Image (cartoon, rainbow over all chains, first blue to last red; front, side, top):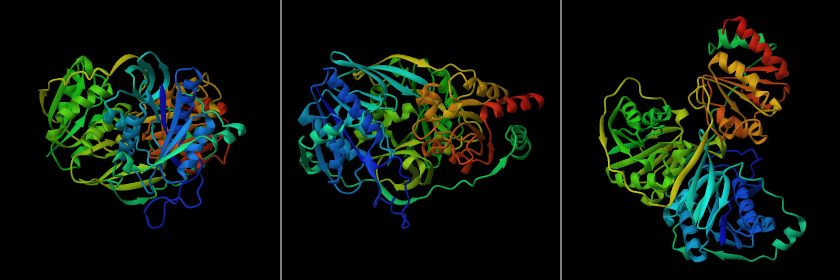
Length: 249
Length: 313
């Protein structure tokens, strides 16, 4: 069974983003870029399935600019077998990504697609679910634990009140939550090996997809800032302030 | 045309997030209907009918919807979609699960986690964990929206909507609910609590969270945690407040032993009053706290407890 793992190149999660003065977006110039952290968890899970003998091949896919090739290389260095780069410059909305991934799924026939539950740039949390709907496949989002059976999978999911287990038929879509696994670091020999692994280059037109954004971003602004308040000296003073000054207890 | 709000409920009762989503839907300026999909969910439907401004409540009562599994929900909502111009759901783990499926099938973009309605086709939503706010305009056609419910108010007053049954849409046969483990607590839920006390890595162990429990009991507060505390295994994942956990906006948020990582701040910085206790006076949490106490929490929390007892809490 093949496992497909879409990976997105985003601003590194440690970087403090800056909104551009002209309010057209956030500043991406000279900013460190990395693989979306939830996607690292997806790659790790796929590689573990291969190590357990449940997956035969792990394919990393990225929809993005030429530089997204680096993100695919990271997945290859972790242990993915080959890559597909669908080259698009500029923003691509989740629905367009899902349509491209649908085309790739039809060509590659994976048994499982594992995606991060959301990308930490646009925070949409949509692509996996949209892909599942377009393919008519079941989904298990926010996965905490994944057990692959014969023609099905049991997935424990992180939900608002705790954990929920669902059983889905495969082929299926799984989206990863934080605690599914801890992604490995790529070793130097594996980084070297990854340079020789193949990456296919495609375009959205190869899948008949128009990536023109449908939502119009009118502006991007800074959130309202909170002012630091006062320091108190004792626990008793804190209680006094909360009770008598703020009136919240 | 009308807007449809998908209710969040546990069959027996309606969650606050439903009324808040109605609050957001009302700002679109069209009549509002609510869909309650569940099993033996009559009580939740009755509660939905009492939300002010709601015209009609649709009830789909079937075992298929007992746990709002995504695939049957998609089919049900798609069947109703031709009657509506906008469909809104709270951005709960349920809403996030089924809504993008509906959007994809309708071939429209989804607007996730709106914070404000600027006009019936223009919305504000957080990006980069709330470090930037995007104002987006939707194209003509149906709108599929999830709502960050802490940013909206429930409509005031009482309503008396008509309740109408709708036929279940059938089982796509792709998935089934197996089991769930819900945290049991006598305390209010994180997303609706007026006061929250949260612990971070500084708590050092799960055991030590009992210190917070005592304060929470006195203040009728919910107990939350930072991602660091959840990842360290101190408390279960549903305690997590932050961009990837729950987004909260209580009257009072007390952060204990939490440094204030960006992703945590994104989940609580809209709280009305923030108090922080941390022994590191450089901790970023103090930059957003209205009241900061630089102290060892293992000393400060028992002192707070004592002080509250003294005051008769």
